[in-house]
Length: 100
Image: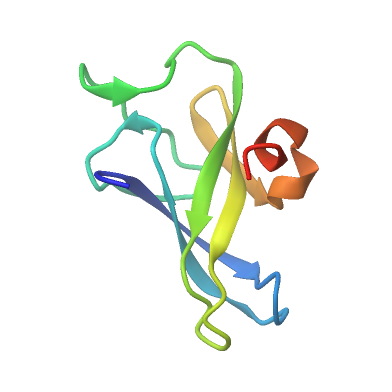
């Protein structure tokens, strides 16, 4: 994947349903190994991925391994006005689901 940013969330594992802290890797904003939480505003610099003027974006993220079952995989990351607002299943976003 190269350089990426990380979003730290507590979420249910899609495979085993365990609720645990997880890392989501994504490429949007200034991509420089920044770590974010939900509610954080993205950083923008001259070397960035995406559109800082977009009002709403759904990102294709990578959900890192579950501590209980080692499941990993794709997850949707929702951005509104450059703020990370939510995560959800890729299947809820037809354009992302079609990329498989």
